[in-house]
Image (cartoon, rainbow, N blue to C red; front, side):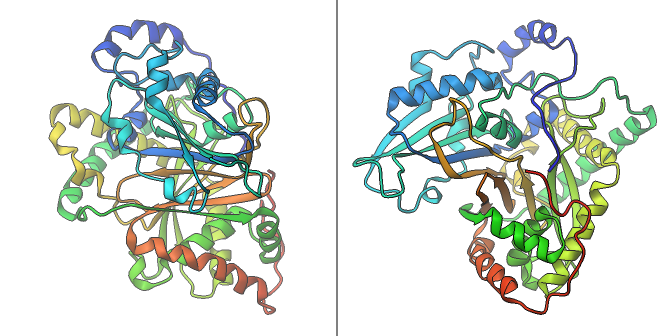
Amino acid sequence: MKSFSSSSFATAHTDALEGAFAAVQKNPQALFTDFQWFLYTGRDTIFFTAFSREAFDSEKLKILVSQVVGLAPQLTHGFKGAKPGHPFTESQLAAITSVEMVDSFEGYPDKWLTTSADIFEHPDLPLFRFMAATLKNSPDAEGRASIIQVRAAHAVLEGSDSALLSRSQTASHGIQSNKANSVSLGARINGILAGLIGASIHLFFAYLLSPPEQPTHFRTVALSRNRMRTLAARLGVRQRSLYFALVTHALHSDKDRRWNEKIIAANYTMLDTKRTAADDDFFRVRALEAKFPFDADFVTYVRGVDRVVDEIEHKDVTRFQMGILALFSMHRRISRLFPKLYGPKFWRFSGRTDTVLTLVPPHRTMGPVTDWMIEPIYCGAYHPATNLCTFCPGREYMTLNFAMGGRHIDLVDRIEPLIARIEARQDIPQRALSSGAVEAD
């Protein structure tokens, strides 16, 4: 896993914020980057949830909110009446927090997970919510007294923020692009052209091929990291390649569960410290495109996945990233002229991508913000009509957090039997560990 940091590159960001104050009063999302705008307009959301040794009540939950907002000030942005950097009022805290008493934790956290559409129904409230469910007779036999869930608009939080906050470290963004690392004029022009062409094609096919509305389902799975580490070493592949292969093979091995018979098409995200002037000014994450050659034999398949991951991560991904950001920028410009084009039908179109895979940085609980937390830690995302799996590594567990339609959600049950079958195989040919197969935590 690539290293990550909350630091930003030197800019006149503070002056820019002050100069844009008037614009924010008219449009609360005026300071959003094109990437933030795209996720906000699409109503993309994220969730973070974990069990607690402590019993949370309303006051304790509000204190937690204040701690988190102090480390992630971007949570004070993006809503009507926002005062960036200022603490929330008591009425605001009351509106974005909730506590319920429950008899047991059976079914949690899955029964709690939703698309979080309610976040966008109240434009004058912050773009996140904190929830707690506390046992009436706590704690239980596993020492769990409460479960906490944070839900937020993806426009204001990403996976690296969650990882930093789990360490009680600052997750303030600042400016994330590196203006000193310039991109050629030709590359920028090509990016703009690609964005214009891509946006036109995207809109055309979205209205031609957009699927009907269907409910999104959520599931979580917790796997022992030591178990997976051992299996990856036996197969001679990266751990992330093993996780990617397990999920995509389980969900898309049937011919009618993937777009192309020969490959499984996936988008996945990673962090990259080689930032350029063309990168987004808010998000640290970069998007990558992968085509995994399908094979019914899992050992052959996972090694193919590992080769693809190796090839992608050893080449410059700047061009693809520029194309994606140019696409978002062009959509934002078009939406100003034709806002009605960006309705539910547009957001339900995800093209010919079978699944989206996100591996967030390791979550290591420490410090006052998370000293109450018990593993496993669950962290995931939602985007309309998209099959999503977010991988969240802790010290002992890797959680797989799914958001997808009904055609695939039941196939999550294939993952555990698939692991057991591979572990039981005696005919796996030995293979030297590939480059990066054993990753640092």
